[in-house]
Image (cartoon, rainbow, N blue to C red):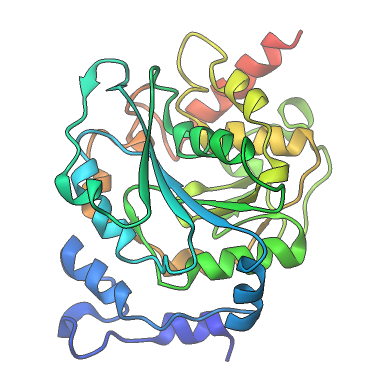
Length: 306
């Protein structure tokens, strides 16, 4: 039985709620506690991961909104942060350049956590760019930044798992991703890589499952440029498309850990409210699985390059 099959078969320990099963039921607090008690499973062995972090630093980055910032501990509590050098939370001075943040006291005291404040709200791509820019100014190109969404719980070994595969495959690695056709995008017209991908390769890695980026692979300037393309905010609210589009331009490999890895993540209930991007917040209310927004963004990029 593979490590993933074992993980998916695990039931919660007795000290968690009996109804939790594989951490699928209960409220957000219960799900988070359940995830925290799952085994820290890795693919290449803990030793390989520890050897890597002796030479290169590992960072974690997230962004969040004023409504969600109080819940960040539910995400952070599920992550094994022992080998992480620093946790960056990148937020603007005002959310969408309008709304103030109230930072909970517990986050100000959280070990290894540092806030990065920007003057302008860059949109959800803030989960990657401010921290990456800071790391690139001071780090070796082999350092790794692992990026997470602010409304998803993970099994504790996810950071080691992502880092191990990113190093062994010399690739950007995520927990889940899709071919661009998933959103009705015409590859031949709008995507930089024209060949169909095979195996564990994916066009677009999705941030909700976690993504590990080696510092050397990320062009902050290009991603920032494209994220601000168009007046309709389609690109500003489509961070996954923008990030992967630039990686595709540079022919950087993007792989998922396993087709079933997505089954290990748990979306918290507070992430299903009307302020969620997948519900159209910040762009439009008519999206289905982000398709409208992603297609519009790529058309903006295509028209802007002519």
